[in-house]
Amino acid sequence: MTDAARRPAGELEAEVLAALWAAHAPLTPPQVQQSLGGTLARTTVATILARLHDKGTVIRSRSGRAYAYTPAVEDEAALAARRMHTELEKGDDRSGVLARFVSRLSPDDEQLLRGLLARAEEPGSRP
Amino acid sequence: MTWAVWAPLLAPLLAVPSARRLADILPPRAAALLLASTATLLALLSAGALAMLTAAGLLRLPLIAGLAHMSAADMRRSTPVVLPIGALAALTLAVAAVALLRTAQRHRRDLLRATDTAERHGGAGDLTVLPDPGADAYALPGLPGRPGRVVVTAGMLRRLDAREREVLLAHERAHLKCRHHVLIILTDLASCLHPALRLLRTPLTFHLERWADESAARAVGDRKLTARAVGRAALAASAAPALPRPAMALAASTGPVPRRVAALLAAEQPRPHWSSRLRTTRPAAAVAALLTACVLASGVCALEAATDLHANIESAQGAVLAHDGHWHVHHDEHFTA
Image (tube, rainbow over all chains, first blue to last red; front, side, top):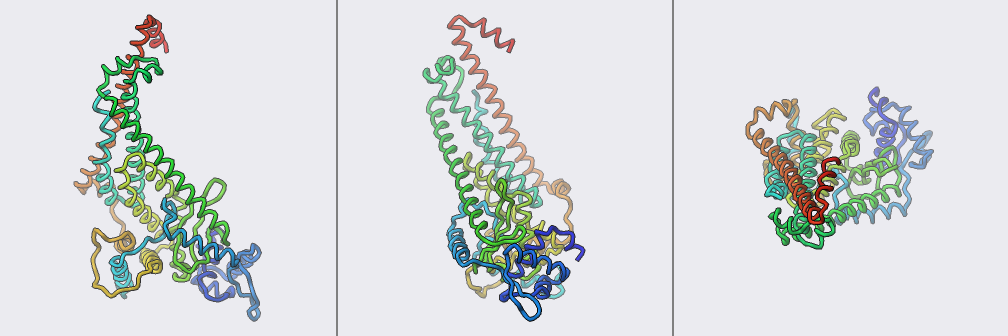
């Protein structure tokens, strides 16, 4: 928690928004806090959600006594993104200047990767 | 003009394999910086050599020599570079210049287009989420007046847990903070000037990813978690269905992602400092020496060729001035200048 307090506000906002996107349904502040692994104080989460709502980044609806939050998406923008993403996938980022998190896996690589992850998850396997 | 002018054109043939070998031994940050700086330096030297060959060859033509106020006959006597070689060098230089412009344009177009997409969508802090079900994530470098952003699809966020998402964000932030795109662009532009330098691009990408992986592991304080995030993201992004196959070891043909995951899982204990490892690993020291020798020789030869060409041009200009009866004037100017 002290660690979270020292991080820039932008990073905390990014994490809260990522949690809302990862969820399949609107989340209340306690649910957001829980989905972040409890690393942020509940009041911090509530403040960030209120700020994101003021900016129009998220929309909220009544859920019992509290508000539940979900990312704001415009349909047109969503369509444009899908079109854009497909273009990028077709190799339109030909220059490769966008550093991607992960590259394509060959079938061999995929099998090898599954093996590596399974071995890492085995109890008592401290590498 | 001496034989030395050819050295910068040949040096990459030996320097590129050496740099790749050395990069595999060095830690990711040093490896990436080594690859990008080797590419940039060798590209500049080889472009310089091409320019000198062009000048030496074309100045044998009386018309062009006349424009430079010098004697073509004198140039023909003093330089062994024949006209066809000069013309070929000029052509190569022109092709390289066109390739350079096109590459710069392609980078610019991709960056502008991706920035345009990111700006159409909601985000918070430095994160932009694309409402796309596919799994993808990348670092979008900032343009003047616009900070860099981490762009992630909704599909990717849904497939990772909270701590894995933290790894993803830390990884992409490392790309942005350390300006990795500058190294990518430099190496791509260098490849336009000498085709052998293209072989440095794939290792550069790999070591930049490793660099960002290590930064992310430090940020979240957990190598195993980082390995899992990279692995699970790659599996999520991979369209191929899971096939039951026997387990394999890392092979030479193994792609970058399993190698990144294995590196994160393996190096739990701090490794000795790379300089001490270099000293203890004799083959590595030999490769480092070879690479240094290549780059140094290339630089010294380019300097030697430039000095020689300059002397030839001076003397050919002197010949013209002497012929016009201005030799003494020129001589005096030369010493007072």
